[in-house]
Image (cartoon, rainbow, N blue to C red; front, side, top):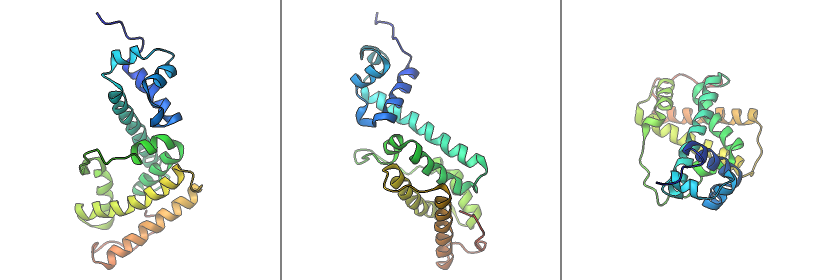
Length: 200
């Protein structure tokens, strides 16, 4: 009969998440996690098949935390919903730099990445409603905006720049309105309304 685990799976995952928040993914080793938990590695391997499984669970936990940032920002009413999603992404990068790097700046070359529109469908629907475009066009518009937003977030996560929220809000509006006008000129968004203040 195997020894009884000293910790629950949830406690180990939380400990691992906290460790990554402090030291980054490179700090997540069996020895490092055991030390953070005040234990030996044995209880970890009683609950998990190995450190690869722990790493996968940490990524899931980080994704859940990130989603909380989006939900809070979009639910606050401080910005229009689509713009709020970008502000939430950037805030996550500012406040959870290590986790942002884990989710959005890790080497993905060995991973199979498939397009999953379901995860961003609410955002696509916002764009479709605002611009009067179909889903494929909304996806491309979102991709162009996300490249811009990701650039800002990356600069903040790496301490390349320090930007105030008011400035970030303004440049996101500028980017959104500029991109929308470009799409109107190309005829991608026929019938879309004229730009309004704080649409981004």
